[in-house]
Image (cartoon, rainbow, N blue to C red):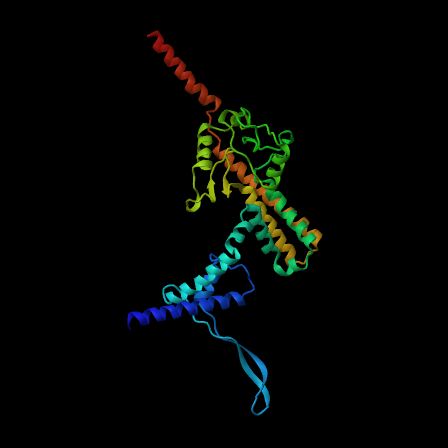
Length: 344
């Protein structure tokens, strides 16, 4: 086969792959055509059998009607990078064009660029599409709020016992402290501070060690240094800094960060508990009001379990100090030895 024939065949494969992808995206109910969607790749690689339906068809010549199999969707051969590279490239060219033109990947990022947005999707899947369709928008909001509230409260972005400082969490600065201020625990924009804390889940930066130590007595220089390195140096998963985790934050418990928003163990367990409760409620056809209460109860129980896990981890991470007997034995002996050396 000449070079020209190969080029022409490759061009034909590109066109066929492009057309196949366009047909697939037209047939699917999902309008989110991101190039990173793994479902498209799997369907492309798997191919599809011919689909037919049984219909009554009238023969145009004899004018006699009878049942016949009518093809509604022709057979689609598998397309993969290794077996059919030309068609694969053509298919993903169509996918990329559709993605860029419709802003699909960026829209996906905007939709899931926060841990609570991801939690919403988890809870939505737990309820199930059939149950969700029977709920009004207000009922869906109440059900979702009940399951999400304990998870949001356990993220560590606010301290409900500190209303005087706009619920600033211990060990962290205000977002809007005065420029060059020695005490960054005081905000010059209280209203904006509250909005950022409760609606955007912004936590603030770690305070200076001495100030943070005053608020968190068990904080050690080693823990503080490790956490500062995690916050500002660790690039996380794939080196992008989008998702990362540390076994010990300022409070001595595990913390993950998704797009710099903190996620704790209680956050994860609260979402898991709320999702399990909503799934159970949906399967048993519980009324919307009771479903919201079930989600709240499940999420609260999950958060309680997560707090218990955190407490166990924090106890394990606290510095081991000698007990009174060990202290007397160690420092008493040192005192005796020093005294003897002084006499000698």
